[in-house]
Image: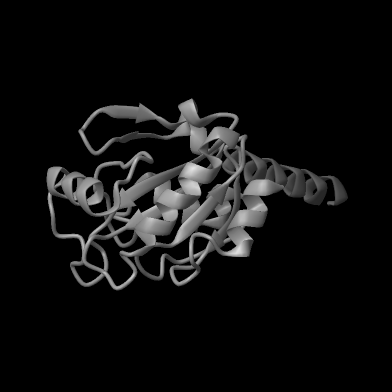
Length: 179
């Protein structure tokens, strides 16, 4: 009986470790122009993944996201924006319209990806990984609104989340980048 329990515990522990071995670098997404992007290209960089929207009260965060990117991009840091229309239809545009808006209104130079779903039945696999502890090995989180920020380390591991109202230049995010 003792051997059976021990074996069962080892199997469960092994399955748990297997589920947690996936990293950001294992995903491929489409950029805002429709080209495939293997997120493996960000190995060695800290990554801030942000779901964005053009018609949200938090949309002005694009300005500080751009400042953050300009300040730290030379220090192995990148922001990846993922437009999403999951909250009150605040990102209704096409990828081309979103790109035009980001460029003309906020001069965004950090990578923007194609519009995806960040919650619900059609949640993108990347966001499933970001929000489920059994997949990311760290914690469960629910995407509460536009501009939720996920912190990923240089090895592609989930580190933490900053909720939408947390400003991009908040000390939680800046300290994580600098340390």
